[in-house]
Image (tube, rainbow, N blue to C red; front, top):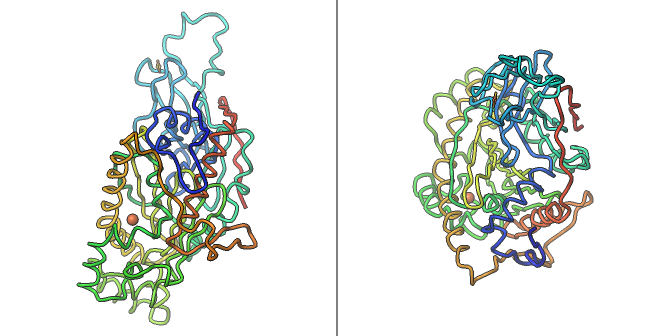
Length: 437
Ligand code: FES
Ligand SMILES: [Fe+2]
């Protein structure tokens, strides 16, 4: 049993939430088992029999689309003696055969073959030995979520005001859909919540990304993306939102002095692709080019999805002090291919040069947190400040350097940790898929 008493105060959190393996174990049960967790995007399993692997906390899962087109989230765990049955990240398969003793499952989870079946006791229930499934699935605008918690709110209620921000992100695509492309992975030696703390932290870019900022200014002058952080970011109108349920939002758009395209730094091929767009779309080239740069917002869907720029980044905890980040680029369905090629090139800009700054600082924080005698982590900026406002939809908004969104996700974290929500798994067979909105 862990004692959560006194670990979270209004203005600070105790170091043990980042370093205590018992807290980590409880989070994997209660937060990643009790919340709706992002698993995959439908564009990763576009055709019948496609699959992609994911994790629900530490639980290995295979997201499949069966031959009828229905989605499943199967636990990647053989019903015989527990081996994982799928080792590939993604692909197409009607069946999954366990490498250990050959039990074979359909992509709906049914156990379809047990080799050398004689010898099992009378009454061996083959139908009851299918792959177990996550009991609740939900989709919103192509994003696939799942929860083990039968008492969790509907997915629509869980997303709340975040849903409209997902709409805004997806609707930058003329086809009203995104398609995830090319996964990149990074691992850091630190707790998963350090990435979460950082996701709505508008205070750090001025300092953490200083070398990139200086390079940006020297090479490209003062009005490119990132320049909005060179002086006090709160003077630009940028803001951060606590959206409830741990979701957070940062809007950098008020900090831009010109259009997305005009403030984007050069990337390889930019002139050539831009020229093609201008000649192919003479009447709308400005709008077409505007689809290529990042969205200039950071939308964090608790507890594991960070949408930043044009990226989907999944926070994948490994242990109390190790975390893997998976990053995909969201291509705009229906946009000219030039736009999506530029999205890929632009995706090599900040993530390649900026993310390493963040990861280095996460590791430095984890080192500092190792000093047991110094117990508290401050999260007080903006607490009680008159510039905080509560909007009609309940969203709490403050200037971008305030730490209100951080305190908001910690509240959601604590609620799940304290309530220890029920968790169940489903047997083989159809699992209803909620469509939020
Ligand atoms: S562990 Fe899978 S068949 Fe034995
Ligand atoms: Fe950063």
